[in-house]
Length: 325
Image (tube, rainbow, N blue to C red):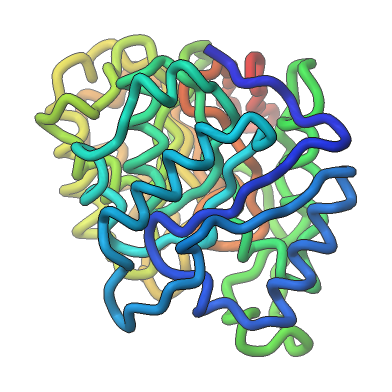
């Protein structure tokens, strides 16, 4: 079940199912609203989006109320999360999935929001999206690639060829918008060759793994997995987190793997990543692509949870195409 695309006059509702809007600087909020309005839409904020509870998220009942209100409101066509965090999975058993199924609309975010995006898809069949947060659009520089694919996936229906970004950054842009460090992107890295088409699943690996063994974990059969992780994940933890996913029922029928760029503090190198991937017999028969422009570095493309993609992994011609979104 695909939600309707955005049209002029639609409303985007910003909610905070993980950390609060209070951590986003006022000037960055204003820039994010200004940028989103270029789509011809209105931007509103949920009742409890800016409640401040210090180091913890707001009470479960407040976050659930905001989710339900956003899906219930007929004017809202897109729900955009403020930012990630650590405890979106607290909410899963309290969500009214029938309400979501009866009111399908765009739901977008990444990082900790991976738990919600995949659970919504599993419980309702609604295709959700791993893409930028509201806070992402408060970035002054290095945002054009992110914006391009965000706009394409939510306003167009044609297949989208996902090209590598020209450059990338892993700096604390939200602390200093002017002094940024950008690096030339060398493009996709083919780890294992091949071609595949399948259903798109994934997001933040360590968050996706929180769903293992629960009713909220989507089936893996026939999937192309898009996986990334953040600065807290060193090569050894990525290795075991990936192995944990490989142990899940249905993984033997996964069609392919696309890995997002790692943050510098993770200390993941391409040689280490190749060693991890090539050490796993379960991955030897599927195409594996690395250094894709999504995850916790910037910029990032948006992809659907429950859509369809085609990939081709070759040394001289590696391709990622979002076919249905």
